[in-house]
Length: 265
Image 1 (cartoon, rainbow, N blue to C red):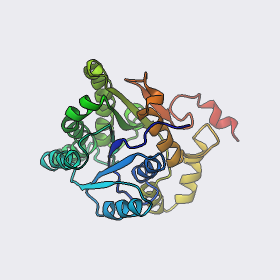
Image 2: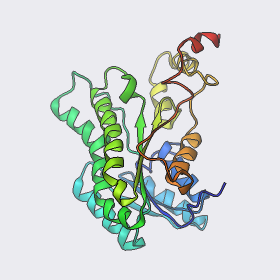
Image 3: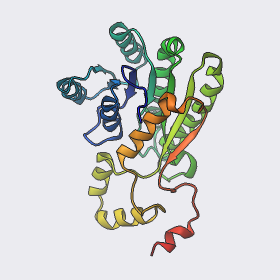
Image 4: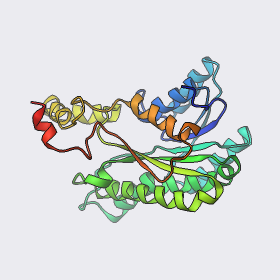
């Protein structure tokens, strides 16, 4: 299916993670569709990713940015618009489950909010004039933690709850401009960061097996390409009447009956 993304300027925050991360997978799938991926991230890997895309004959741009800094985000948007003159969609993809729990300091809690939800507000705020011109749309990457809790991660849970609130608020705010706002909800996906965490555990393989068994559909984690493909569909005009929605790509983790887990044997 042609998603009609060819030549579209798609800004993706948190897009210079390790190879195989959600953001990195999204930018490569965008490139496959002929879109122009614009990376917003603080990590130097962004330069390498853009160079690799350009070797494939794909236009791309990296705005190296600390997304906890409002000035840097504003400047990143200015650079993007100076280069391309437009923005067609924003995918807010930053997310670090940093373990800022009830024992965290005020500063640690606020740092978690700045990274995991305030950055979404700022990037959207500064991109908004250009989204109005293009009648573009916004996709926020969310987490099941906002709905299920996890324990020991108050900052991340509060931030991801805020992301869902902003998704619906922006959907209401922006209807008059023809701008859609949606969220993609992730439960368990075996990203490089997830793998790094598993490796820190003494019983990592047993923990991984237990987590896989807790996912009703096929007893496996969601692949990052499955997340990326759904993200691209949502931002495309193939999803032109979808706004204010929380789209779950989680193998039934959040909503299906827990008895299914036991039935898997």
